[in-house]
Image 1 (cartoon, rainbow, N blue to C red):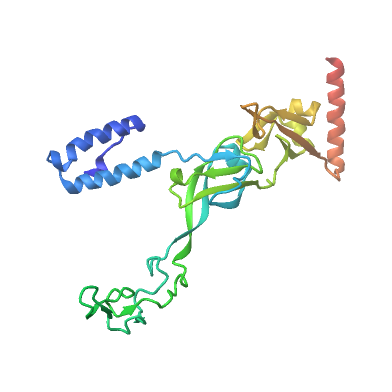
Image 2: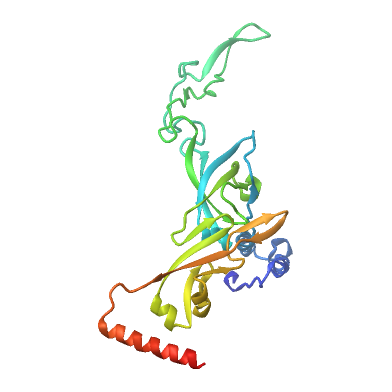
Length: 303
């Protein structure tokens, strides 16, 4: 059965599997036609899944040409972690009710050229006698479709939405344009999507770097060996011993991707700590802190 077929792990094995099954199922080689058609449909679906829909990045729109333009917001997670983006593109497609003619196919009116007879009178070029020929306007039917289609209002096309899944390239910057060629993405027209990077609630963009302002209590900073801070790739553990020296730490190559002289590089993630101190301390806590401070001095001086 088709559901039991296994294509393997990669494109080479998929193609090898395709050639093997093609010989086994082809009707000209004794195979079953229905199974052969099912297999072709299955292979087409698998091949489409493996197809790489990479958009091209350009810095400006073309000065001329027929293309679709739109703006799209992208999150930092999308442009930094190579996530796929589903773009909803407005397209014009042929009206299904009138088949693109702009007129209602079920409603007609009497042809004004032949007055509904389907024939027109003319003179024979040879005998000069009167002859009747089919009306060229209605094709001899006597009626014409001239009632405007209520779906497309006579345009012949309707607006629709097309969903396209795009693999986002690295180094995407605000103001760039994603170029989606119509042949590669099976679109009616070329599409240019202007990149707008959405503001992140935790990370600020400063050039190619990201700034994270993270709040931490003084107790956590003093009593814990590590604290966790969020990054775009997940949570990161930082040693509190480093943060007690400087409340700003730089995580190299954890910022925005960018190209410099053709080489792909990445900015830094700068973590700035905001230490939260207690406003009111109970007397018992102050006494404990004084005792802890005296112990710390004694141990420190003794060491």
